[in-house]
Image (cartoon, rainbow, N blue to C red; front, side, top):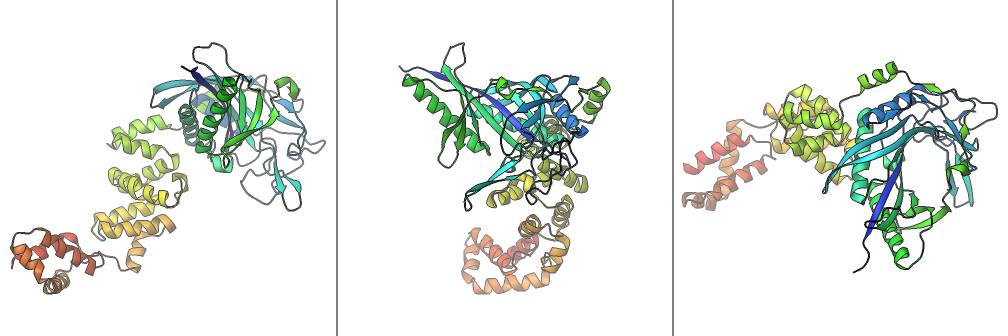
Length: 478
């Protein structure tokens, strides 16, 4: 019987805050933009320039701290973390080591194994570095400082996670809390949420932690899950061979599904941290904390319960709808306009989700207005169009946010319930299909379905199904 190993995982999650301007200057934080256009002397580290703290950064950090059950350091300050790298223009990063704004919190996660609390060691505020762009053609590296000085919070967990499932559940939980607070859009693919994974393995039952490695470059939940599996296997193989795990930072290559060493792990003293002399300490009053608490929006767990009680939605629907802040907003605004919660839920859960999947998009990418979805629901309810036509109209709303009323008029999609016109079509179909009449008279009910289907096809789906059914029955029995 071989040894049994346990994986021990802690995460450092960097979240880019949704402020309009950077943490210590007035430059724009917008994603994209030509290189080095969102810059000034402060965020490019020019001598003699002085940082001034953006108050909104503190508010967002407080909001996230309170929502994750953290204690607040009411007296906190910034420190300089010194290191030399081309994308770090001052040769130090302004961060918080000694007195981070939030500490000792927790969030509850749920996996197949049940519920579990994951501890949060601390949350601190810091500035992001710039970005190196490697030019293969010219064989050189260029620096883009647009991201330099973009405000971040770093959420450092306790080493409480034991599997990839728990890690993903924890990240999902954090992402939803932060999105609901409006503190960040948390898009992994744009780098506004980044996770570094600290992982070690030890024999089951051992008290001591094993030697940990830190993995970087993880920009999707799938990549994180694969990296955890890959690193766990690598460390166990080393230990089984009687070799040591080296404490180091590793870079995950998702294409190769393997990691490689970047640098041996530094300790805090290597960064020569010291308090930043250019920034005054922050004093967070009880009143300020109370104000932030008062403004906290309804978070997912509360919304989940309310959707089931107020709108009478099944738990499954409520979970899907609240699983994205943007989806929940569309749902609520549409319901306010048309007062049909289950109907709105059905359109979002079936048609919208199907189209998102087909186009490889996320709920965050939905771009149609609640007004147009409400109009579509009204058109069906008032029998202006039938459900089959409505699905086609919804596809146009989904793709281009068209006005359903105008679209239905322009394309001539209104339901035809003119009995005279429909009667002529049914008679024509019966003439062409005498066998159906014979079958129906012999007691075969399927024959009626066939004639109804042919009529709907001839009418391009625009006939009123109830009228068609009545006419077909009447004419077959005649």
